[in-house]
Image 1 (cartoon, helix red, strand yellow):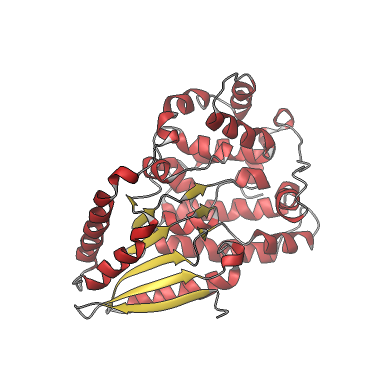
Image 2: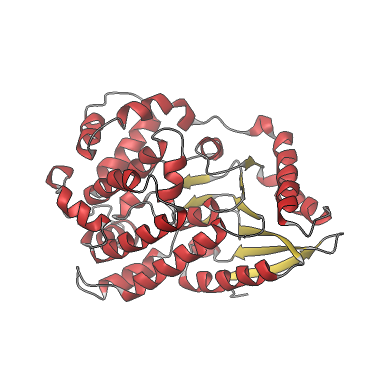
Amino acid sequence: MNDVILFETLSTPSGHKIAVATLNSEKTLNSLSGPMIEALSPQLDIWAKDASVAAVILRGAGEKAFCAGGDIRALYTAMTAHPVGEDIPEANKFFRLEYELDKKIHTYPKPVLCIGHGIVMGGGLGLMAGASHRIVSEKSLIAMPEITIGLYPDVGASWFLNRMPGRVGLYLGLTGTRLNAADALFAKLADHFVPRAEHAALVETLCNARWSPEPRENHAILSGICRDFQHRSASLVPESPLRAHYDFIQEITDASSVHEIYDKFAMLQIEDAWVMAGKKGLMAGSPTSAGVIFEQLDHTLHFSLSECFEFEYRLSCSFAKHPDFREGIRALIVDKDNSPRWTPASVGELRRTDIRKMLAGA
């Protein structure tokens, strides 16, 4: 089958249905493409209006990924067809449709279970973050690594990064640090741990449950089932490096500018692989991205969900015109030389006025 998303409904004893959407592009690690968005968004609308649908499951095909991010190769093709500084209509359309889909999941009138097995990054986390029930497994690998491609954490990250403990959201945005299942639970990106071997049994249990016509009751039913499965596997939850490094994160991000954070990382002399991986992500990433991320979370701290998505739409359109986004994709994804030439080349050359213009959508 060539369908980019597979849709099905599963029967239950109460006469209700469990609707299932499976991202179906294993070769691209189920990366979120325009056709995927254009298929999933209207189908969610149909299921929302269908009184027989009690809950929705979002999952990815295969064993490697739920969704490794947005289809940035397509964005690169669109951007390189235009001069730097010029509006990119194709990118603007993609961002608008993607963020509308993400917001739809956040505000969906029925319970949504996202099975975040394997890689969940960027646009994949945008889908997962808004689900009412978010499952992670022993193979979950979660990150917002946009700084490495000259972008910033979007897809609603202005909302969910600001709701993490302390300044964990800022740290993750600046470093692109990869999270395991326990990290995701600590950072409020996931709700329940269910090992991969139990996922089929979980879906079967959902199909054997007696659902209600009332969405509120169905939320409680789904929560109870997820909790039962988590309790069975509590001993399998890994340790959380993110939780263990919480005090370090608070100290190194306690700064009045992104330049101070760079200086703190530069002076670090510590034999800690987890910390050094974060340092590498920050130092190799786009200085412009770092400057925006530092301002982004403070700027949106008191924004509503809708305001966050509108802000990110304008900001993403600005990034599509900026040289760093296309250069980051070229260096890491297209040519794979891992030697991006950022503009400006260092954080010391950053001008706050330029960052403010981008935040304003200029």
